[in-house]
Image 1: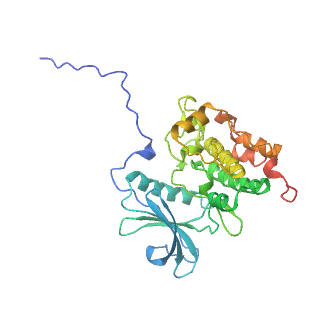
Image 2: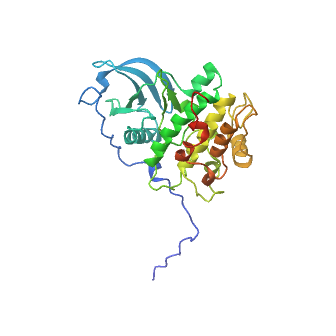
Image 3: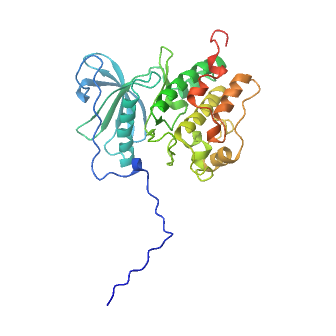
Length: 317
């Protein structure tokens, strides 16, 4: 009797996850650990003394630590061993991306990565003693245009460096921009960043804080997937500067809590927000260059560094 093979369903489509999101069948190796600034030995858990807790979230804790031998202060990000597999994979990816961007002056510096006997993954980073722009907004109030121009210039220098290395941050927001007592502004938190294999490779996964996501990331079908993470970073930068100027998230009323339905309607189907009349023409033009609904119409980080808003003499701004 002949064996009859039934034809497979021709229209069956099973979506495959991104390679970066697939669950590995074996433990991922840690990247090489960066050397300590004061010597050739790698930083280990025994070298560090906890001083304070800086924050919690995403399956981990960030500590302020001191190196026992050199007395240098670092930020130590611990991803706990009981964190879900996706969070742990992102920790490995974050350390690799930080290493790749370690010579970018506007990115928090990477000092090493190791795994504790408990299974916790630890990333040693530069300590920024001034906190985040989100904290500064909460404690000191809205930013002047002069200060925003300096902040924008620093963030753009960081993004231009990252994008030149094909790294999309994918989570630019006030909480992820840090400052120190010297007034330096640096990009931090690369837990959802992505190394782009091609300049126009699409970011298809819903990562990052949804409130700062660009229209094409909310609704990739509408744009045919023809977008990239670099343009999405520019959109998030525009919203960040807008928020620091007005004191609240641009698409919502003061005190309103965002939800998915409200955000997707406002970001995808509404017009980009407009700055109040108190904003200068140059600042308005800069933000509009970031908040173009069509990703291809947004200025790049390199182009924005030539915009009059960030190029003016700080003494006359």
